[in-house]
Structures are given as structure tokens and as C-alpha cells.
Length: 255
Image (cartoon, rainbow, N blue to C red; front, side, top):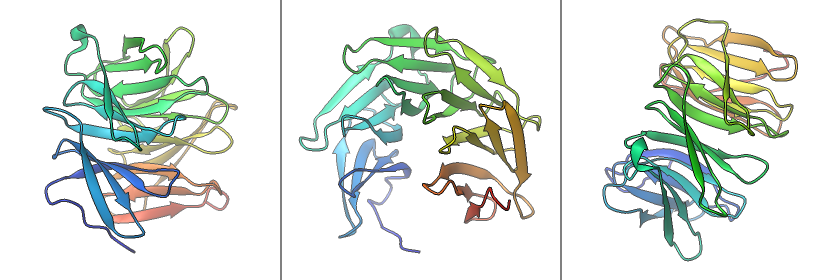
């Protein structure tokens, strides 16, 4: 395993690879967006504004970094060439949303979550934003888009997987087969199945959006705490397990 040191106290939270082989990361405590060059091991930081506390970062269809910026309660776009930062603030009545993660749908709209009970949609072309109340209040955490364009988010405090109706913005609550599981992160495989980590229960879940069926597997060890999940190009599943202080690999074919 190769590690890359960053600025002391930066507290990197989320990472996302860019098309030019650099890696964006949110330096949450420093209030900045970082960019690492794995070839040299060097990283630099881009200031996002006063009071910034970024959580998630992804690369959009335009090649820019898009950040859920909880400190300023805004979505931030960072130009990779000029390093210019553009903020899209949430409405004033949606203060302190505790923004978490974001995902682009196939129409180019950005969907995002806020752990204090909201999810929302931003049109980057017009700047129009809509914010919705999440079922069961607090909890919306990770969000992901499937290859066929469906958008799902996981609710940590709400203990469910939410499927967003992209036209109306309404949500269908999908109940995992383990109660109080603490659904935290979600990622789609190539077939449109959503993979979800159960932070509280120590389980890995799969929701087949076509068959509308669930499967789940309990992680090994005495006290698993699965956090992030990622499905690679072979449809293998990777999980970061806080309880085991390890990265886990799961093969869906042989389980």
C-alpha cells in the first residue's frame, strides 16, 4: 500500500480521481479543496471561502470539481485550470443543511444530500436550485446515479435507501432487510444495482433496482463498521471497514 502525506491538520475526507490522473480531496478542517499528483506525491490546496468545511467532491461532466461545501452551505464548482471557485448557495430558509455528497444524473443535473434532513437538485447551466425535505428527517448521506440514470441516496439516521423521482423530486423509501442498519454510503454497479454499507449493523447490502429485491452479507470480524463503498469496472465491490481498520474486497459472483 502506498500512502501520500498531505498538509497536517487538513483532515482529508472524500477523494475523487480526475481525468488527468490527479486526485481531488476535501481538506475538511482546512476549509480547502486539495489536489494530489500521485506521480510526484505533491499536493496543493485551493481556498473555498471563509468558514469553508467541504465534505464530498466529484468530477462533473464539465471536468470541474464539484464540492458539497457544508461550511458555507453551498455547492462549489472549482475550475481545474484556473482554480476559480463559484458558489451556488442554498436558499436562506435552508440554513445549516450539513451538506454531504453529490451526484450528476444523466441530464447533467446535480443532486445532493444534507444530513440535517434535506436533498436537492442544482441545474449548473441556469443556477436554479430546488431543495426538498427528506423522509424521516435527518440522515441523508451518500448519493449515487446508476448507468440507466436512476438516483438513489442512503439515509444514515433514517435507515433507508431513497429512490428519487427525477421529474417530481419525490422519494420512494426502500427498506433494507436489516432494521436500524445505518445506511451510509451507496454506489451503483454496471447493471444498476445499488450497493449500500450498513454502518450500524456491519452489513453490505445490494438492492436490485430492476428485480426490486434485496441481498445482504455480514462483514467478517467482531465489530465491523463499513463506511465507504465503491464498485469497480469488473463489478467487484470494495469497502472501507473502520472496525477492522482495513479495505475489504467482495466478489459478488462467489460471495
